[in-house]
Image (cartoon, rainbow, N blue to C red; front, side, top):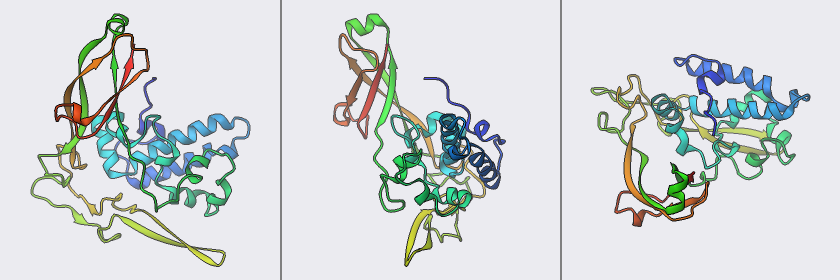
Length: 268
């Protein structure tokens, strides 16, 4: 799979960009690459629109941004599914509404656009996101695939930062309760539609859904409260395995080293 483009480069911003600068860049690019405004090449526009939306989803969220800054794309891979970012992972619908108007739901719902898989399968704010399954890739030679091997695999996981105890704040400091959402990490928005009201629940844009504000981030975890660690397990790859084959390793068969099932994808 080709290397993914840097999120900051995708939005054309500096790594020190503020949230307002991130929002401004996304607003400009979203208008530029909206498929309906690119009739000559809507397919390319869809790809670009999705690319900038993925970058925005990560960089506008304090927790995801901190993991990305520290570990790159690997740090946020577990936030998305096997196929990578999809519109089901996009949690900033209200920002799209601000750009394109509050009729975005009626404009896109059910008409087969890039948003159809998102708006057509989920009620925003009321359903829990689908559970993600961790996947790792193992490269082996043709000879190893033919004969079968046992190999050691490193499984990345996020653990509580020992430096800050998971608060994300530097030693001697404590996070402040977000006054905008009052520590809830989410806000409600009411909209009148016809003779009724629609109540939407979304992540607080001030604290990024954390419920608190960190003035001085922990230097070890960069404010996310977690650090990446590796659990090493031995995986037995059977004879005659094909390229792209997937092995499921259940937690009960990993000698207590795994807290969840994982899928090992074989690359020959």
